[in-house]
Length: 511
Image (cartoon, rainbow, N blue to C red; front, top):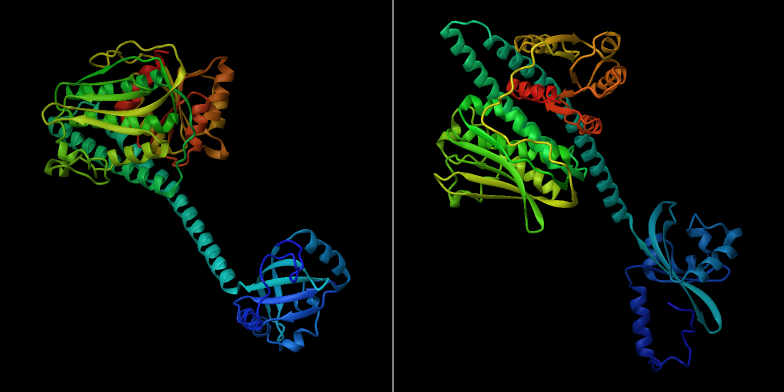
């Protein structure tokens, strides 16, 4: 409201009749907000009934007081400066406190304007009691703090559960793999196979449940950057070649030089789930992985010759716990969370996941990605059936792992594959070792607050070259993945499937 004379003859409104003035006065007295008129000396010259009720004074009492008597934040000596501020900032709104006759302070929201009446400047103030709003705000703040504490507790639980549950499963998978390579009777070998199947099922369940929990807890965040698809495709291809071999499947790779915008770790988790499903549910024939341009996007594709999916079921397969038929209840089928996790991760990255399938004719899943303006050199030869690459006999693998059970299991497996093994329990022990390994496999969390990526970096500096490295971790926090990515290290989540670890080691030894 501008500074003006409320009785100015220049006003275009006609003079109010006495009845209208009485009605206006009655309305002002009954207004929901307290109304005060204050003169330039800080004296209260008018209050309405709401102000009297709110503060517990009679109207005459209030009009014998100054603003400093009811506002504890007003210093009488500073009133001239306050008046100048009110005049300069119109309308002037703020939150403060008013003191009642009993001495209680109530929070108020005040709006003040300066008007001229009969040649005299007066401040008209409207004060609203915001006690209820403040209580609601405090309640919301308390609820948010409680929710934040619960979220932090959930995050800590997930981190602990992930690490503590993955460790023994990781060790058991390695030990069973080592046992399967020993001379066994047919009956013993059958038992080992059943153990492997059970552990695989447990690993899939744990991975799915913890991954979904991480997303719900908000511990997974996206860091978008340029991602060359060639190395990603090659890694996934190498990891699943051995598994495809075991089933008699052909797993083909189409090399690519395309570069897209995405989170490198999360898009790899999406693609890993799609390839895992293709290999798992295809009993004969082949699967193919690759990418191509389509319009203004890049399609990261997985083709398979599996049983296919009916059109009526295609809209629900990305739902959590979706299992399409009774065969899904069989051992090893999981909880139906794999494609649900793909959908959640794609939503987080703002990517679209598509599907085309028909019963008896296989399926193709693809993720639509944003391309960049440049490409990377293609460094992948076309994929073929079978792993085709024997273990490099005599190569030295250094393991850095503080869990004695896991360290021993890893050593047994690697020695069974024909590698020379240096098994160490800390980064300090790695620094003291004289051996320069061909590949380093390190846990992320190591004793003394050190991390696996730091240990590999120190070994690389000593060797005078970048040593191929793998971070094996049960961490749910993104730090492990980010630190490894910054150093171009591979990351494998515990429990690690031995076939995938073996394929990755072979790939790293090829350079």
